[in-house]
Length: 198
Image (tube, rainbow, N blue to C red; front, side, top):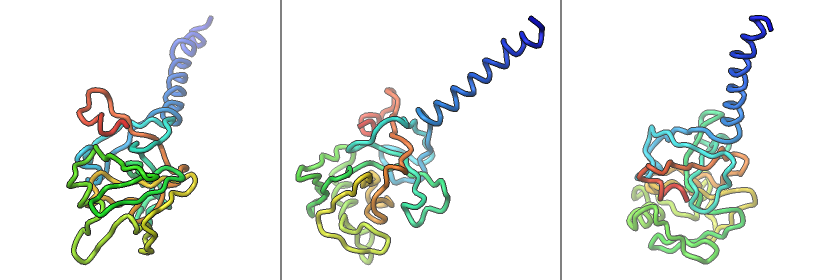
């Protein structure tokens, strides 16, 4: 075996295999996303990097990362990624009561990941006296919907944990499944894992 062949076998091939494995993992299995803004406070904080599993299927209370381009009219880039929590799954019927309680298909959602005050004020109360919102307002055009809203097929209704300031499905509607990059899964040593890893 020549020195050149030995060098390729011993050094170049392992490097190429490593790069290929890294590409496959990042593209199809696992990656990181940066939390941008305070919409997921108090459970996730701006500037924090969170691991996402790309093969994981979202379910109720999952925290997801998705490409907001084409979803939120205010998303500026073609790859403007948001981190939000899944409240409604495809086909779910969402409604609410004046005390901030959420109901999915007639059953109350615990919302144990945020406080009672956050549930009530952030879900239904106005940001200020001249700008009211609630779960009936689902589009940027401010078209009021019936008090019970059905999530379309292959779509999700998402909200930030910091309901008072979060820009989410209450404003611009549903997130198509095709826009979802993955589900956030915090490591076992993270103090917020129980409120994120749903």
